[in-house]
Length: 202
Length: 355
Ligand code: HEM
Image (tube, rainbow over all chains, first blue to last red; front, side, top):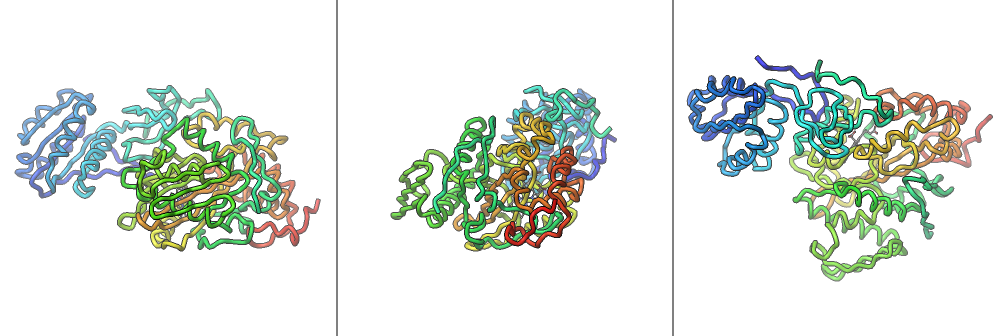
């Protein structure tokens, strides 16, 4: 199982649960990479659930590993997208077509869940209808507080901003609106003294 | 009294200075010889004549220079002023509160003439005489919050209140102690306070929120917060930290008295009438260490507070590395005599330094 127990942190840092089937006429499941495992386990718990479900899956680095198993769930609709950016228009459309009572299930990396949650909230889905379950990589989606550029899938602290090139340390302070953690210049008070990058949670 | 406005800078050559009057009315934040977080809130119902607490929105000798500095920051980074779409009415509430308060409290500087929704606003120090239609955005050069806070010292956060929670949904933030409006906008009270050490565990934010939710129209409240800043730099933003952070390393025993500043925020809380939002003005006052120690009581006390402050707070406030040098300097102004209770300078009654 690709689960990870995040240590306790500050109040802005999201916490994730375990997906559980909820009653509802329509269901939307959005997952990336190992998030597929959470969908598979969810499907096993709710007889008849998948027949009312739209699955949007982004395999990321896992390639074909989970695709056939997910397809075999025979959901009402099943879509695999190459990237989140390529899938987001579809996600918005599904959310804007949604009727009252849509249940949303998000699984996989924090970046995927955070962005999809922001879309759902923007579309007026109540918090209480959104569940999340972290699976797979602990990589973070980071915003550089200096240039505002987003660096996806950050695995080390510190890291280099993909946009402005500053060396940033990884904070736990998190913005739901941006679906990103905050990155702040690590060597501002001692230019050039950048600590050796360490893998997150290692 | 008429105010002589300084022509000074908060960047580059840092020509900012406090006059003797500004030093004596400085909002010294320590009422005793030690400091810890607390729910330090009281009613904002004026204060001693001439003090920074007297008026609803204090205008002082730094007004014009602070407004020039704000304009520079906004030109470089327009995201310092933001308002989520549902906050426009709260912006008008803010404009009204500030215009009414300033014109009543400083009639020689500001005038507001209202004829129905036709309003004429005169800001004499800034040379503004503008007629507009209240609640009609097309009659202002920018949104109402930005318009009025380009003419009012201090940062402003505007909090929407929904279901027993406050959300930071608008603001003008150019003189902040190292936090980002652009990052925090939309967060709730506990989320934007997340980085603060110890206070959550002490239950301070729970009690503070409860207090704020009950702030009523016409009964504003206030509190003080403080930190340390090297050079009189107003814009200590995270956005620009990669530029100003290095200045913390320029302190020496020779220049610390002039360069190291105590930074105090007079924070007030106003319930707004139409939107039911809460307005949170954060007014920043800076004072050089050498000016603080000119008041014997404050010199003695600041030394004791800085010396005994828990490491977590000194780290969070960003001066743990400079604390030893600060203490070397401040200890020269602490002769061990007791200090009188309260924040006031007590120049007539407190003994001069016994050295
Ligand atoms: C609703 C109005 C308020 C707003 C918008 C606000 C905003 C903030 C922000 C943005 C920070 C910086 C957090 C960071 O590190 O990123 C902060 C710090 C803090 N706030 Fe508030 N705050 C408010 C009310 C209060 C109240 C009523 C209290 C009462 C106890 C309080 C206590 C504190 C404390 C103790 C800190 C740490 C400051 C330091 O050590 O320098 N705040 N606040």
